[in-house]
Length: 488
Image (cartoon, rainbow, N blue to C red; front, side, top):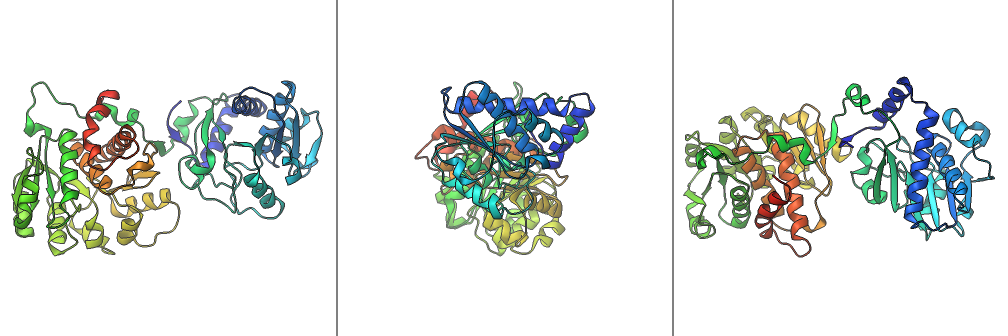
């Protein structure tokens, strides 16, 4: 199954397109409910246990009715609660309810008593307002219940398109969704509530995706593997790219980590420009690094006269001063590609205009965390996905908004969500390594959107390889095994 991510409206369109191609809606609902029942059985390790199925007034509730029927037929003791009136159900949900021959109780917290497993089929990803009244009380009761919880589509209370929590949402052990995942399955805080995600095939033809043209996808190697750079048999260091990094006088570790990462991921040469006072610190850190002292931004700009220096990194440990500002403007004016990180966002706080005027465009990757993002783009409203897309459109650059749910956005509206980063990467210097990885791929001629995507994925894979106790210095050394294990 592909890594496309569908918005709520796109999922509705996929359902409609499948029905237009002759797949009955009742068959889609039957398969969805069967998938839920199957996962419920696996969740309880195949042993029948008391199950409470809580159904809502829409198609999510219809899936719950089908799941309850299959579990009961398999000998499981099932209680079914409905939020609303059975006679008010319409369409496929009404059909699903008509197939259920057991009693239907009013959905209430009392139905949770004695249940070892609860199936939450109250509200799907299309919920667009905060829970209140008895629905809120019921979801809060599920959240407090001491039992296994399986959510249908999303845990009730989750907004499917942005991953926000609309009042409350229980923590599911498993979430079963259908055909493709939705943004909420991968974006925090909802991602935490979803537990293990199961994407079930319910017979929607893959061909419907061509008309939907989803702009969001999971960041997987399949998206960029074909463009990933490999050394040529007749190659040499100069055609593997020459990366240029600006280091600072005090926080020297940041640029050194970025340089090591860039060399490990294949940049043919890396030059680190730094103030003369820091030359010794950089020179003794890495034998394969070229260290070039520069006294001011003009001296840095002269390094750009060599066209072989084709990719630039500015910001890690540079110092948010006038030299960094001028060096950044010179780099943007040189029409090369590169990465802007760390101190750049402070040096240009609330001054995106100057960057754009100097030549910021989609050849450049910006890698802010939340605080740095706010410095450059201001207090932009909306979800992380929305803000990254808006920032990419506004700046014309690739935006990589760092976090446990890293969002990589292209100015044309495409978005990739990176989900393989372990929490161990939340350590000093980790982001500098990421910048160095992206820099290496840019130096080797990779498209910036693909370079940002590949860099983020390899960064996450390196974090997984190192595991608990990692420090940023470990990450560049994990690049070799990660490349080997993944045939990159």
